[in-house]
Image (tube, rainbow, N blue to C red; front, top):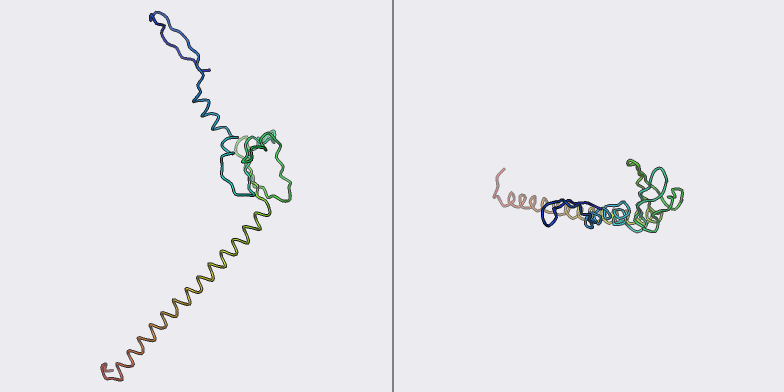
Length: 150
């Protein structure tokens, strides 16, 4: 409750009035750890946790079903990265399948990029060599025809 003091109708006494700050409560609720973390965008196979460092209880997570449970950091199928911030540990977990899928995609993208780059390099080199050859041909023809004297 919040309280406000105002004058009565006859302006002779002050009256204390209790009010519920709905907007303030709504803002505070939106800024709770559980709501902030739940709204964070993550890739499939990735999760973010905010854990109370003393109790080891999850207070915020991208998966709302994990809030209130103890965090597990020994699952072989996941890799965990954790940083301490005040009374909280912030952990990001990624599944092993996510790593292998990302690695294959990254290798494929780099391979395609290198193939295209090499093709463009060969094309550019062939054009430069063709232009150089044509200029040399023109010079040789001019010399033969006596248009240029040495």
